[in-house]
Amino acid sequence: MTHPVSGCHDIVPPPSLQDWLRASGLARSDALALLREFAGVSHAALLAHPEAALAPRTLARLERAAARVRAGEPLAYVVGWREFFGLRLQVGPHVLVPRPETELLVEFAVLRLDPQRSAEVLDLGTGSGAVAIALALQRPQARVHASDVSAQALRQARANARRLLPRQRPGGALHWHQGDWLRALPAAAGPFDLLLANPPYVAAADPHLLALRFEPTLALVGRRADSDGLGEIRELIAQAAPRLRAGGWLALEHGWDQAAAVRALLRRAGLSEVHSLRDLAGIQRVSAARRPPPGDACH
Image (cartoon, rainbow, N blue to C red; front, side):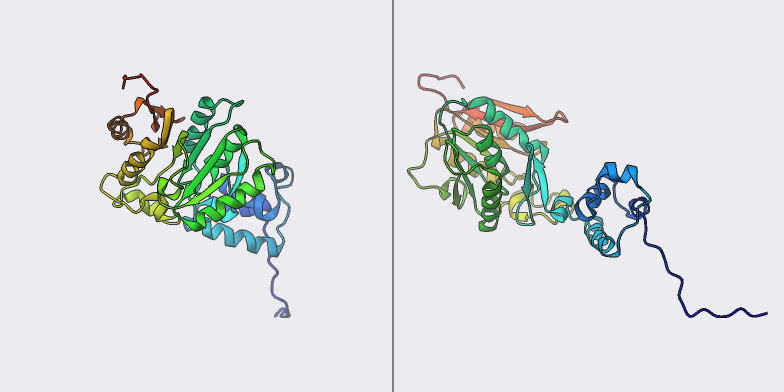
């Protein structure tokens, strides 16, 4: 006995939220972030209604985003933002994705700036503007400058500042400068009470660069690439040390194994009170030093 042939194809029901989460091929945290950004589904909503079906258009957006993450693109670029020091910073492929370790620079600066007094501060290699903007919010009396060699990075930083900073700030608007470290600034700028930097510190032959291939090489390796990744740091310290006010501080982020070398460079530049700060993993990630106040001969 034969059965009548139907003219209709079987209709595949759309996947549920839980189905998509399981089949996404992503780390759970990344998949949840995509659901939140592209489907408007919070973690609480997922727990309450895991069986809810995804609309075809939403599913297509999720699949495109998931494919980018599976290919190794940073989640921050896919969703368009990254949290830093409690701020939602817009990021894209022209700037590094802000890392939690870089918050050490802001914490260091906040502790050394009097909230009631004006100060001259410069964030070198500002990228997305993360450090400069966070510090401008934490210490509104400070006059904050920020420089970057990349015009595209500065456009991103300015956009973040317009969105995140109050229009009327005691220290005024941030001052942006394009160029090579302190050469970007007018000769009369400064002296500075505080210089901060997250410079390129990855060696050109470092195998980890493959995993960072979506981020700007200029911000990772710099233009003075060398075998130890310290080329840009050497140049930065040489330019920065003479522009510090007596008693002013220079603090910069560096690689996990570069702390001793960076401390030696700081001492060689005539700076004192040289020390390194550890991140939450216990790694010496930021090194700092001070221009000796008048009459202080101790290094």
